[in-house]
Amino acid sequence: MKKIIPQSIKNVYHLSQAIMANFLYGFPSHRIKIIGVTGTNGKTTTVQMIAKILEENGFKTAVASTINFKLGSEEWVNKTKFTTLSSFAVQKFIKKSVQAGCKYLVLETSSHSLDQYRVWGVKYETAVITNVTREHLDYHKTMKEYRKVKSELFKKANNAIINLDMENPGEFLNISTGKKITYSLKNNKADILAKNISLNPSGTKFSVKNTEINLKLLGEFNIENALAAICVGISEEINMEIIKNSLEKIKLVPGRMENIPNKRKINIIIDYAVTPDSLEKLYQLINHINTSRSKIIAVFGSCGERDRGKRPIMGEIVSKYADYIIVTNEDPYNENPIRVIDEVASGIRNKIEGEKFWKILDRKEAIKKALILSKEGDFVIVTGKGAEETMAVGKKRIPWNDRRIIEEELESLS
Image 1 (cartoon, rainbow, N blue to C red):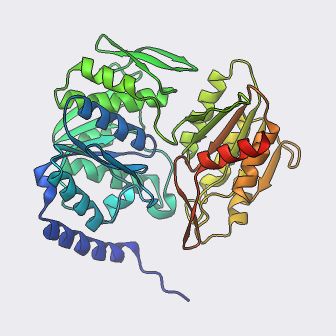
Image 2 (cartoon, rainbow, N blue to C red):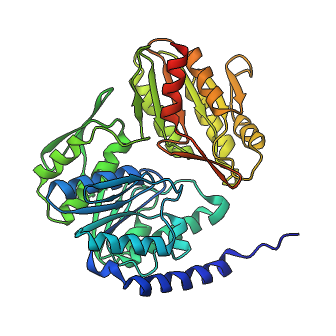
Image 3 (cartoon, rainbow, N blue to C red):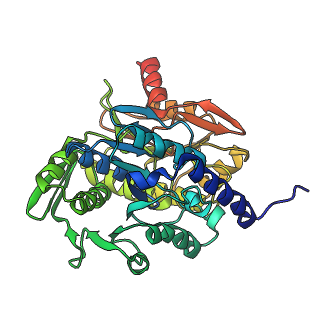
């Protein structure tokens, strides 16, 4: 039987690697302002918003996120499938950011990277948390441990930016020793409070400090992301008018509530949503904007070798909102994809298989089935991959992009 090395022992090795990486690259984080963004959902969008605000204020900015890397005007796709890279890659990127003359680096920081010391030695100017909901329990085992690991980021930073609408925000407020800024959609005690909220199919509107902001991004969750970014802007003494203009210029974040234009006039949306909370919020939003009560057709699955307990929960959530459901393959890694699909499907309620829900292993065929079922005005929601460029099958990384596949299938069906 293969001996399993406890993660705590592995982390001793990771720590030694991180120490070596810091010395090798000369502790570069001490020469740049680093803003770390953590949380279960919304990290990537918040990172993009923060970077846009900093850039609009004239600061040369670097970005390392789930979807992209950026050094000033140079930008490329993150094809690694890691939110936060290894300690050597992190330190190397920080040094490149310094050498490129960047004043800021916005670093998406995962719980795995905190636990495995990948960001050991990184001097964070500001720590931002979006929320903590169920995810990664295959690794962290309990929500208590998951939250504890997230909180490590706040021990490192000079400034803390915390969502008062998340569960038990006090846990993060109490651990932070620096300047604290809070934000909320509903808590009047927050430093930054969204008021006059208006949601519509083309965007969202809200006001902060008597400044009205019109986001082109949909949903209350994107207002939360924007509030986090606004807090960063305020902490860096950026004018509210610049913050407003920056946020209003953002048309989309790839793979996040991304609409796919098409001649058939179907509302095709791709989104990363890989947690029960993110799926619930996504489908609540779709239900809100679907004023004509058109059909909702869902294509989704769940990642292999990850938290199995969330799979039936996700199936049940989608079955509350979707008229038709297609459960399909999604990054199985070394797990049997049929088992993953079956466990997701076990949560589906009020749908008869073969009539209103299907299990289709081939993701391309699943997308094709959804497009065939759809008519003008219907919603086809494809979740789980977002803007990713690969699918993890065993040890291989198969080229894959949901948007590209959807566009190809639309063309073949026209």
